Length: 599
Ligand code: ARG
Image 1 (cartoon, rainbow, N blue to C red):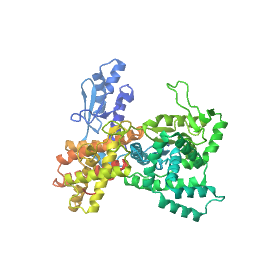
Image 2: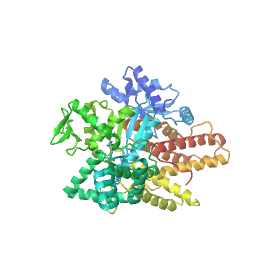
Image 3: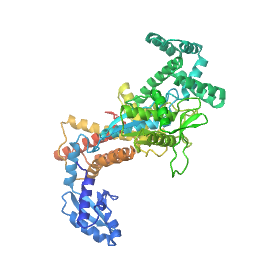
Image 4: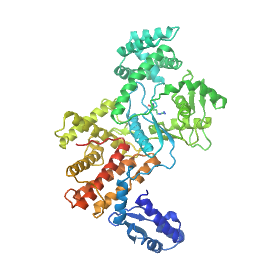
């Protein structure tokens, strides 16, 4: 199945070739002037330049060859030599029916599916999530869904940050505060034999009584702040980190408790916004690979000493600026952020052997990834070019800095959702939506509106762009927002319910009105939007398509009466409406946004 744009492009290319001109000049694009044409081709101008001929004359030759194409209603030369094409009503109708009958709603698939791993989310044990994690989760989830939909085999991994210096900080802080925990850790460390399963269960139960997620949330920022000022405190935290990594049993027990409580809460919050990881592998999961990896790097002559630390230099000839080396083993003997990242590449190779790994992480980590990737290529752990950092800008406050709460703290995902939901409830009431709903149904809609607001506000921007957090704008039912899209989808649903109540169904499509043309042309453009999003790893192309489709539907709905139209027209319009709804819902689903039934 090809879309109209590609199909016409092939015809125009053939016309160029038949005129003895390069076929690639026949590319067509949606028209800049929808009032005059559906598609245009600018190739005659380029051809004229190359051949030093008159562009209008070249265009005339091409146009002559296109006139007999049944898909084309009119083809004309405009301005300096643009070729303007209007598609025939029959071709539009045929394409609409094709899309209506397609489970993929006109979207193609990749020719050769690949194994792709998406590394996204990246939350950390105990450290609160910041907006970078939120963006990573939203964008990563959309990329994962899109890649899977296009046919690749995709695994999404949270790459839980659970093995760094923050763990040493936290072990110290918790033991300082709670004498029971401190003595438990000491006792376990002093044992000659490991804990039995039963003893372990008892220990975890006791820890659960003493340390909650709220405790970790409270203690971590204090400890982190103190570590910055107090060198002794910092040294102790580093030592505790190294001891944990050496698997001192008491430290390790406490650490597992931290990881557990954090993961349970995170999974719940992520799930609430439609972000679900296939894997929750942590940095710690690759710890056992590190000694062998260090040996291997050594054997390959890549590891060098640097003031007690062991590093891999990654600079290349022709680099414009010097990149720092990869720090593999710190002078205290601990594994670093980059060490676990390198070992994770090995681990993934053994378990899933991905052909491509996409790291959806804040742009500010670009150097980190460049260093890790280069080290991996040098060591032969991954094929050159198979690792890719998908960076993104920040979500900022009105002060232009990464978004913080009014108190200046990091906004917790849970609080962000609650805050957005409160606003969504307000908006729904203002617009007199959800009236007469049960409380449960109203809450469900408010939740969906809130998630749509947050996600769409993010995904409508090219990921590299930073944007300003503006809850008022994000939650509005007007403009380029998630709630607007949900509202349009719900309108179609209610129309279709009404039709079904009357026993009316969709049928063959005929195209008459300009608004119908416009709608079918948009339905036709879906595959292009998905391809572009796929190629550029940029979900904003899907968001954009969804928005344009919703707008086109809105114009169609205003201009073309449906339920009161005569039977054949009614059936045709119902097919257009239900196809639009299915495509819109699919696009939203790829963005990780769910649509309510009613509003
Ligand atoms: N946990 C990291 C952070 O909070 C993000 C992890 C990103 N993924 C990775 N493979 N390094 O900054």
